Image (cartoon, rainbow over all chains, first blue to last red; front, side, top):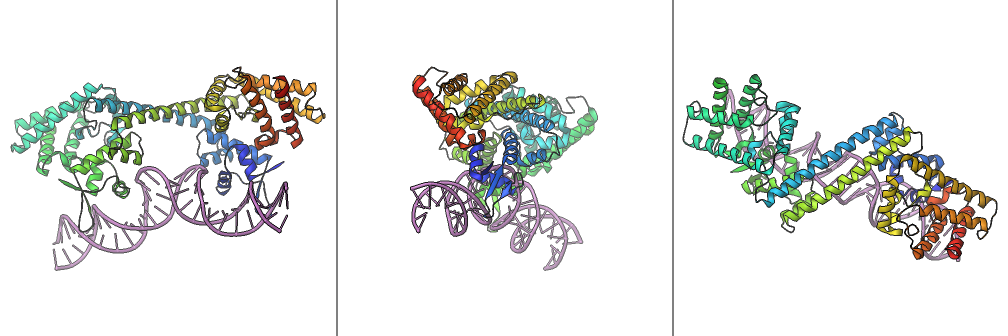
Length: 252
Length: 252
DNA sequence: TTTGACCTTGACGCTGCGTCAACTTCTAGC
DNA sequence: GCTAGAAGTTGACGCAGCGTCAAGGTCAAA
């Protein structure tokens, strides 16, 4: 028994283009090639195609399927790995749903859903940076913490951050010295504010790493262009940095 | 305040390539274009970019985002539609997980996980065809029914289908007439077998549509190349068709 | 022999950028 | 003022998995 490309395609519920594609990428060659160039498929090819389509329906990529068919990988293990990947995908979509719902709620409450730039390091957006700066664990914990808050709690946190920024800006404009008592109290407030977030060294009582983190946060104000918009001039950012560093050196 | 492309990119946690892309596709143009061709972005552009990134993080496509920003679509409605789409995606992944788990079980039980071709019309693979032939409802119901069965039940169903095919083949080879009593009893058994599946007209007691369906199933044996492999020759398929049609005409 | 269905090989399109390549322009230190 | 290096620009290809023409050769039935 032998089938033409269209017959096999109809039988399998796919198009002939797909079969040509599989031929081209080496996934499924026809069992016979006519003198006219026509592709003919026998039972063995049909069986192989069925395995391919089975795996494809399960969402596997063609290279992965090719690997399995080449028996480089055990089929059971391949499927198990695939289940794990699917579960992760489902969880990702779950999180997205929660996130969009949250956004919608915030919009309906008349609040800007965009998180404040001072949250840098504590949301998904800055995930990579947080991980590289404070480790995977810190991201996981702080991210879960943030998403576990109610909208009201998030608003309170946002308000606190805005108050803090306003205080910093006012002090900078007033020409206060970074080592003055006022600057130190602002820095203390800043550290206090940061230590609310679980996963940070400060929250975990790790003094050595807390000091490093506070210094690092100070540097970010000057070095990181994402913070550039927060102050009218570079001097403001430098003031915050210097105040935080002085605090870290002498009060922590 | 104004930023260069790199500054804005760093601020937003994306690359300059992305910003150029957004410019090219008309999603976000720079607020100013230098005489040297450099792109400069102001606060308005930053705000627009933040809205873009917010929506993108929610998984929306760029054209959809552009629509929202063009205010052709209400933002709330857009998000609600997006939530619905995400929920559907999550459910789809859910179903996939169940399907793969099922496949793995079947493999471990030493059973071929590929459903029998006689199930055509009652599994995902033939979804489009079932829907076009018997409607969306039939697909939903029969698909849920199939996936709700245990492995043992599926195996029993599969065995019954194989017995039925064997009986048909034997009768065809024996040269039985399609209108003979033997052929009629086989047809009755076939209809009985099909009526187990909820969602079919037969199972739902719709006599008119049952007759149509049985005739249609008969036609499929001859017209549909997916059934071609079930019998050694075209005569076998024609025998099954004729027997089913005779049964539908006289006994239903 | 014609007609229409089916076969072939290109080649572009889609999504959202990543990643060279080749070239110009700005910035900072000497 | 010079020069190095960082940053800017516009192409253009690549990715996954085919869909979808285009242009032409082949086959089966009337």
